[in-house]
Length: 565
View 1 (cartoon, rainbow, N blue to C red):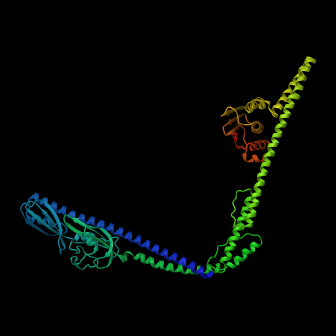
View 2: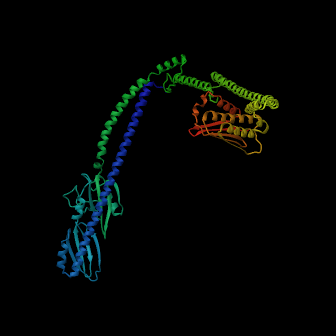
View 3: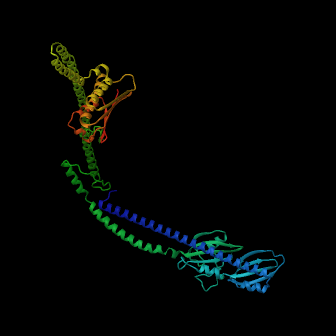
């Protein structure tokens, strides 16, 4: 079933807001009623417990007063008249009865008297039984205190015959004994139960009542504390009236707002035209929410959104490819997605070209470096075998055919030229590297550096196997890397000590160099104009290694990990 957009929006918006508002109203009102009812019950229960304790205290005090007078009069061996006079002075005492008996024993009991406003205390001594009849005045005074009970709240006592023992605030002119209190609270109290419930009181009016039993040496009374349910819930009724007015206002505003929103949203045709215009100019518009229940635009909006989504996906995929992120994913719309097929084909071709480019660059660098090393080796050999031999021959001939002063001076110059030729030859390609390997070459390099510069150079070499796994080319690369690191430290750091270690494991070789120089900003290393780091980086890349550099006020630390394949 299809609907007009304005009607659909008006019904939906107003319906949702109305249901939500009514639901909130119901939940809030229910919560307020529950909280108020719980608070009222807690207050009534506290008052009932307090009243019970006060009633029990009065009963106990009267018992102690009578017992003390009896003991005192007995110790003085007073006559019955004196005993009656003494007992009559106790509050609430209305009548006294003395009955002679044999072997009465000693004991105490109490009970209520049906259809009477008195309760009885019975004391038994050696030869006399004392019956003291007390009224409920003191107990009634306690229960008349109605703090926290409002206008309809009261506490009262009920006897076992379910007649009221204390005064009622609702029937002040009636005798309590004439008021029948056979209510749910009184019945359950005499059954030994106590609780808080809503039930009709002796007037038949719904109340919230708390009840429990007072038991004192056989004297049993139910004490009840009650308040009219209407008065207890009256604050909620007042709040409910205000909330109903507020709810009506909210619903009216919701209706007006829903109508305004519907008028604003009945413009999908304009949006559709705007987006099509953007597509015709090459701009990708934002995806629009679909109107599935609108007959006129549901199908068009669905197709348009799908087209926009596909174009955005293609643009995003093309941007990833342009940034070299060849692993980016692209989800084709279907088997006939020609644009997607073309983009994926272009990505595959670019991956192949990029792989070939990196391979050519690597091979070019490797060939260039190997050519440099071969040329160095050739020049070093020529210097050593050609120029070095010639200088040595000249030195021998000079020593044979010159005067002694001139011979010494010329011999010193020849010695210096021979040593310089040897230094150049060793720097180009140390013969010890070719003859004895990388370790001896590095040790000789560190020793010569320390002798020539005065900088302390400490070198350690550790390997887990007897022979190195590095081939000749790899050894030359490692030697050149460390040689370049030493030159950089000497030229730029101003250090006085260099620590170098080479550790060869089963699967990798670790190069470590640390100096105590002034350090530099590692972030600017890639922008440096020198070729030293470039040479280090190129050789490390050819060895598939990784470089880690830390530099600061305490010096520079360089660590290179090279895998062994």
